[in-house]
Length: 221
Length: 230
Image (tube, rainbow over all chains, first blue to last red):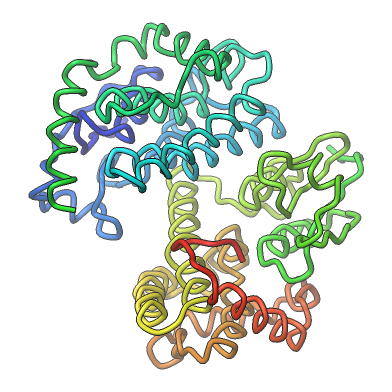
């Protein structure tokens, strides 16, 4: 099998998704740390369209966009499937992956916002959480059923990073347990999955790093 | 394996998202019942079948409802195996998904924003759309269709460009797909429109002009975000 490399940064929720997929499948890979303030020729060569991380390199072939990479990993290495077999169940999983991608942006926006803009992004995040709470999980332990699947990976990074970002921003907490009991139970279970537990960026490190980043972002805005 | 459960499609006559799904169903020869939905006066049926987004298209297969056009396309491709739309190879599939996402975000929404904006914002949106089409032009070099010799998933995903974009260019007095700048894209647009399953399945152009004239005026006068739904 050709060599696998992952270009990324450890603080990125998008890179994390790919790491989780690789670890679940037991695929060895080389991690290439990227300095986003000084993008490498390697990154520019393999993601000329977006110049963003993560980029997966399988042999010489680059794959970009985190959930597209995750799906590529799932189709290339068949063990520990991240999608069910039934087309309708697969469609539901893809629907929620897309939802996480489209609506998860409010969480990233929270990180970069203050004042009125921050309040707006917090409301949008609340709406996103309400929808998932009401329609997403049903009575299942995970989106993937008894085991985590692609939608869990997509949301896992959104919600874990939401928790970190709320800590960093220090305003009112949007993701309250009494408002979102299903989601709270789900993220708790998600973080307890051994592979995830082992590969969740350290909370204290993320908060400290994130606080510095946020200060810099708000100062330059 | 013949799939005999009834297929219904909730749609809106002018929606390019709905047409994508119809093109896929037609190419595969799948019979379906089309149900027109007035998106400005949504029915309880739509709210029930797509409670999360309350949007069309929604595909109903037996008792199952599926929403989001690209999710529906993959469902169709996996359920009805004839005339496969996605390539077989995982890397080619990843590339197909990559360009689908790119085209939707960087061409579709930029062009839509160009149509619904004025002045500097409009100019900026046109510029971004053109830059994005440059990448697609590269992808098409040496190919009849994105799918190779025949229409595939990516052609269906970007097919709206061949018909909706010229309408938007006319309504918005914009020049976006210059045939001299984009010969491959232009050639692809013409070939795509000539395909029997496509040309028989397009909304009437004159009605589209009126619809988008009204819609773009309405949206241009409102305060807006960068991406808004057509």
